[in-house]
Amino acid sequence: MTTVDLDALHALAAAVVRPDDGVRAAARERQARLTKPGGALGRLEELSIWLAGVQGCCPPRPVERARVVVFAGDHGVARSGVSAYPPEVTAQMVRNFVAGGAAVNVLARVAGASVRVLDIGVDADLSDLPADVTAHKVRRGSGDIASGPGLTRAEAEQAFAAGMAVADDEVDSGADLLIPGDMGIGNTTPAAALVAVLTGAEVATVVGRGTGIDDRAWMVKCAAVRDAARRGRTKTADMIDLLAEVGGADIAAMSGFVLQAAVRRTPVILDGVVSGAAALVADRIAYRAKEWWLAGHRSPEPAHTVTLDRLQLEPVVDYGLHLGEGTGALLALTILRAAGATLAEMATFDEAGVSDGGA
Image 1 (tube, rainbow, N blue to C red):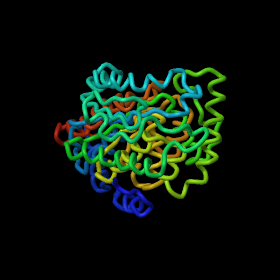
Image 2: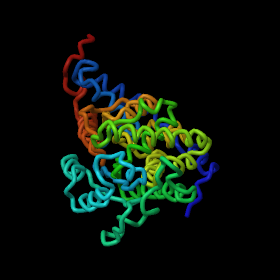
Image 3: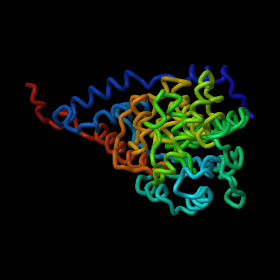
Image 4: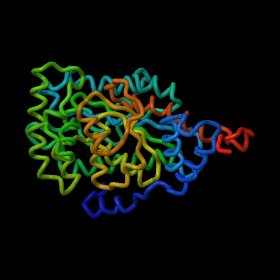
């Protein structure tokens, strides 16, 4: 297993470079010459410039091999009633993903992306599924963060390294854009705890309703996040220690995934609150990494707005989605593709023989 100590994290941070400023400047200049009034395409213009910068070319190339990787894991805290669904649903949904019947599968087909499912910490035996589903499994369910660590230090390192390895795998296989998806009953509880620790937000301002819990379950969830965050605040010198204390195998893997994508200069569309919490961890390790990420959407979970504000990322859509799986990011992918196409395929004023109005 790869050791992920502080020296390794510092090396990862040093390996992250900023997207190409020269290309971004060229994209802005080309935008100004397209056959439209300046700013007429609104946010599409900004997105096209971002895409050109992370691809390192202007005009940008079409996104042809977008890949969703769903990180699935269970959390011991779910047994205390912080979710409207029983923990057994995680394993059932993994099977649904593999069969192609979940929302992420449907939206991926619409968006022209493919889906990979990983059992990182599901509390079930899924060995009958294709071998690549369980190839990076760390353990059966993470611990209950309300009463103790979610992982050991070694398990957190293993999960983080697994996420990095998966990112490498996907990029080496030709993926030109990555989307981290999540599946895990109770996973918004460790996500909220991580957000509380890394932003300093009050617990009550980051704990949401998740799958639709009632007031009693919300209070139980608040207490779990409060107790986990209290311990987590003593672990902020080392993000792997923090992931072990208040995270889970799935979130630790996702943190390594989005960070390694930045190392590999591969754009990422983040999804909801769980991938947002993972991104906060990766951002604390390497502050330049966020320039390789796009916020796909805004989840109604309050911790997600706190996360986006801290990362200074503006979501592409705000449709009230809180399913996870990568669904909001897939909607944003279709818009990003449209943005790139306008910059690449529209004629300039000179090419079209159209007056730019400045003569």
